[in-house]
Length: 600
Ligand code: ACO
Ligand code: LMR
Image (cartoon, rainbow, N blue to C red):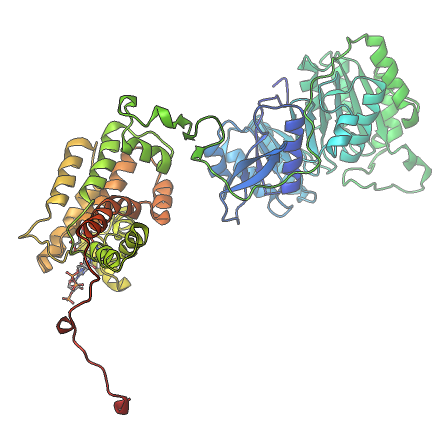
């Protein structure tokens, strides 16, 4: 790996840390990235499916997942894990992601992961060739390409420190605070940085100075390197070694902070867990001298560091970097209340999921009503056999005569003088668990039984225990002797056109058992539709989770609602055409069983 990040790098962000993610997206917008740098968020306890973030003046939706595995499966191109889990779970999150694979680097922000665990974690990552940044870090940045969370601070600070575009320095520090300080110094005294990493303050961090410097040595964007070490540890000696054996050839400027420690009688522990000298060779002064001897540019004090950077940079005669065009993040932005993912009416012509209406409306476009449904309801173009099935369902349920619950209601309402909308709604309101609205229930229960390998007998016992009639079974007038030809027609269509019908095959074994008890307990039209829709979606490669979402949303009953509206409207128009008077139900058709007042 030559470069830690590029302009195409995308991350999976573990923990819905909205402020940090928004900072990343503001950075993306500023530097005109094409895709947001965060492709997915892992939020184990959230019930939400996405989180909205500003992208410049607009908003984007970033998908939320409960597990890293789900996020990675949905966004396989995202090869950076930004692990913002607490110190209690950061280790497990990293280890799980290493197990899942497909990550080139991981950044761990938590401070205080037990050192024994951290060592094991870093070792596993090393074996798998994954660069770990941290623990206890603000991360890393490739200016003009990708920035981790909060590194570099606010957008204003980032632009002031020239972190919005690549310069020529490779910067490695331990501390995040000093990283920001140094990038500012480099922007004033040189042309900014090409890649920068704050490796983290813990005693055992994943990638150490040498790992990052060796990568930067190979990175053609990096022309020289700055190392800001600190008191404690011996990592700086590996850099000296690499210079001596020719692995590092680019100029290196370095300074170890903590030289003040010598003015104290006993060893000093600075803020970082690793910032304490256990031997003379771990003191800042000793390391600074050793680095100077090895030919590294080491100033006499931290105060002289800016001048030294300026000198090394100027001597290299690096060509001036042109300032790129940037976007400006608006000062005030308003979050949108509604989201629409199916149609857009803003341009010259409205479109359905990208299809202008004129491209689907007329017969020569080849689009039928089923195509339009598949686009607007399921946001996909279905193959012809599936589109034809959707239409077959609509036509099959369009009407079933005037006596059924819904048509009766619509007719009574129309005869009470109400308009088409009111009468239609009166009819639609009858659609439910007994009439026309058992399609979702049938899909749900039969799928559940089949998924759990229940025998028909076990399924019946299970439904009996739950105390509800099996949705999709039974009919008032249809039976084995008087078969429902709509059901026969739908099954025939499926047999001839579906790749396979496993759930229908299962449902028919259930029907055998129910009809053996009572001959009207047939698989009814609702049941057949629900079950065949599941078979259709499975054949269209939808996942079980996606199918469950459709069922929970009530998408299956919607087929009856839409289809039967055709019939209801027909009945309403029929009433209007016939100018039928108000309907009053005959009193002799009602059993009056009302107590007298004195009986109460
Ligand atoms: N599962 C188990 N037992 C049933 C079922 C069922 N789905 N449907 C009826 N039964 C049993 C009843 O428990 C009752 O048993 P019992 O005689 O031992 O008491 C007997 O059959 C008669 O029950 P009713 O409710 O009177 O049956 P009816 O034939 O009048 O009802 C109905 C028809 C409402 C459709 C009923 O079968 C049912 O509720 N089915 C489930 C819902 C459903 O699928 N509705 C869609 C129908 S198709 C359409 O509307 C387009
Ligand atoms: C329908 O489609 O409306 C029917 O199956 C219901 C019924 O009672 O006939």
